[in-house]
Amino acid sequence: MATRAPELSNSNSTTLMPMLSRSRRPSALIEEREVKAVKEIKYNLTPNRPRIRSRSVSQSSTDSYSSASYTGSSSDEDDISPREKAQKNSKGFTDFCVKNIDHAAFGRREIEIAEQEMPGLMALRRRAEADKPLQGAKIIGCTHITAQTAVLVETLAALGASIRWSACNIYSTQNEVAAALAESGFPIYAWKGETEEDFWWCIDKCINAEGWQPNMILDDGGDATHWLLKKYPAMFNMVKGIVEESVTGVHRLYQLSKSGKLTVPAMNVNDSVTKTKFDNLYSCRESILDALKRTTDVMFGGKQVLICGFGEVGKGCSQALKGLGAIVSVTEIDPICALQACMDGFRVVKLDEVVRNIDVLITCTGNKNVVMRSHLDRLKNGCIVCNMGHSNTEIDVASLRTPELTWEKVRSQVDHIIWPDGKRIILLAEGRLVNLSCSSVPSFVVSITATTQALALIELFNAPGGRYKQDVYLLPKKMDEYVASLHLPTFDAHLTELTDDQAKYLGLNKAGPFKPNYYRY
Image 1 (spheres, rainbow, N blue to C red):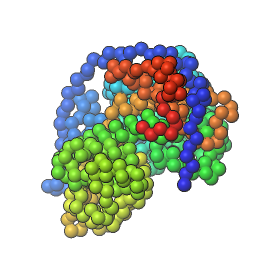
Image 2 (image 1 turned 90 degrees about the vertical axis):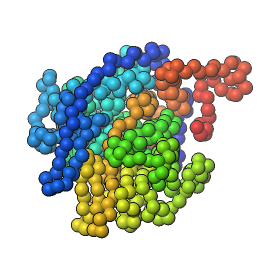
Image 3 (image 1 turned 60 degrees about the horizontal axis):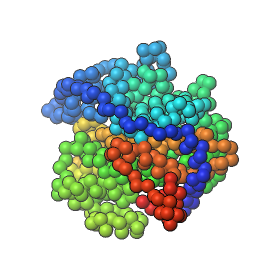
Image 4 (image 1 turned 180 degrees about the horizontal axis):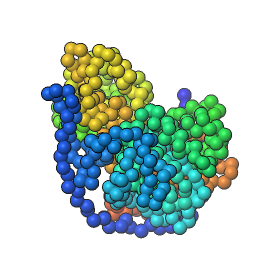
């Protein structure tokens, strides 16, 4: 059983707070840019059988099947691996590997749009830019590379950091955004549709660069941490801190800590209130519908949906689907989460009990072997199968790659798996994170998480020696409250202030924190 992470005392957060002055109101929205769309239909060479359905594509490029990102191409040039291309940006910079640097202008427009929906992170940039709290930080980033991530990358750079970045998922990179970052001079190694070998090559290129000694890691899933520890242990021991934002990555950190292999402090951002209660819940509540609609055009009313796991991600997915009229059931191992599901009006079942009747199966556990081949064999014809957990181990996709089953590509990230009797299921993103692989996530919620990540990096980097041991920590509640306060002006929200008498009665500081560490929001 994993030991609960020690939470930092609020007195320990003094490294950061004095350097942050009052923020200005978010700037006015940028002028809306109109992009004309053309339509293109692609067919497989198999006679009489269309195999890929089209998506609208931007006039600035002809290689998009998704409104969120460039994902494919009809040009011969883009069939070439980015690793085999000699690319440079307009200033001659070559320390990057992206799909196509020529798409940078389109990516820059996406980043500008994201900035308007990320008020907290932009406010942090304005407050701390003059102080450069990350001056001297050399950060390895390994996260989803989206327009929202680009805003975080440029914020960290504005605060003084040097950065090298790769993707934590082979399907979630927005190619035009990666190109925009490369055009701005950031060493970015990522593109959508990497192979597994490409994936590790990209991480290695970010770590093992001439004249580069990383001293901070920002990870999503623990892959950069794993690779640095495995391949470059001496370099790993010189890192000042790790910031991790996913269930999978945090689990890995606890395992390293338990085995005595964690030789640097780490910050568990995933279990911060502002990550768990906002990104995991509200983001997934919106993005699961977006991903399913874009990929399958399914109508949810009356559909039998099974959500595996009723943590914050499962709660968000369940609420969204129930709201559109789906009949939602839940599987759970935790009696507390199961009781919550019951009180919210969901049936709690075992997968084996309902597997033959469900129309949509969504995993949200972060575990492995949740949906096995024995389950997949019993699914009804046309069942949609996807994963909302971070890891790609929840659905046993490898068991479907056998000679008796036929894989038929329908769209980008959409496959029909056809059984010998003609039954087929619809598998999305090959079992990987469906919302970031097949759609996008709300920028505003990502702003909350990204601001939390930035504060964690600042705190670990500036902490005096000895403050943090070789352990996994949580951010202090005071910082969670600060992240929330940065986002309230967007809603024109006005906080009530305690009187001196009220603060004394509650035993609180008038400036917070306002809840004890054991409080569960």
